[in-house]
Length: 410
Image 1 (cartoon, one colour):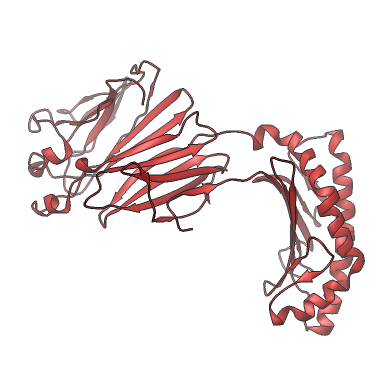
Image 2 (cartoon, one colour):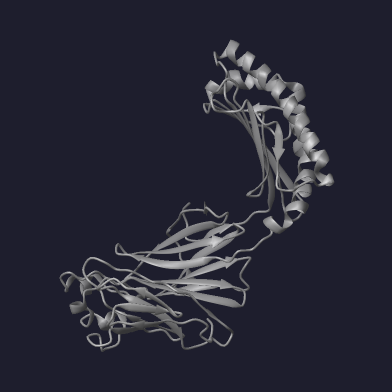
């Protein structure tokens, strides 16, 4: 998806997926599952002949399972009939048939539907939502289209389901899944800087998937760039990345995020002056440029700041580049650094070698007053790290850091 403003809005949908695979090894002859938004509300296969679902024994859903079983038997009959016709006219033996159909209910109570079929992954057709006719614009689909258009009863039943039955069923599933589909998980955001002049705003871990991510450059929305589009995470949350190009004349970059879990937009600001320039890096042989990544997680009144610093910079070069990354003095003695920020200060131990860079990260939770709730101490000389009364060995020559608060919440 192209465009720096990545906006995803939607409502509730119920989509049914069906696979008919007679004679295919390792696949049930008939299988299906239903998705309310991105939540699976049922699964069925002809081997177990059971509708599995997360709702328990709820009497209100008994008619749903009965109707779905009748629908399964009805479709199986037509799939078998289609297979025979497809074998005679197209030469398809035991075709694998896939259906995807359902409806979307909008916030203003308007709705829309869809009904798609795929055969062997080669033929793909869609049903007209106003008349029981299948459409395809590919010449090779003509024979398949003629077979499907001959199934008058099935086609009429498909439209009846889409226009009469789908939305009530969606609402039924929604009533019993409200806590799941209406949950709100706030996003985590990070700005990454690549050395080809690209800034990436990575937003992850949010739910629901509706989100707006936008780069603001010198106070105005950016006009060019790219976005990955929405991507699923393993934990039923989502992520998206939006990029912009750095300009030599532009000084102010911020990534603005709007999500239903946030009371106000979340804004991450990129400080151009805190980045090591390529010219600074090239003056120091063996210098690996510092990378500062700021994670911000804002859930209503609770603000968590995650700052990852993995600056594999050799000690001999640290003092030379201290102005670029705003490090304080006393590197040789205490190896203490601070990243300049009006509201937060970062402190840590800078002891590293040329091979390793280990980050031990801890989060702190700030109250409305910005009080420090968790902290960290360290002992450098005996290579021990103390974390909340825990003592852990620290590899020789490794950097350790932590964050403290010196102001109020952002």
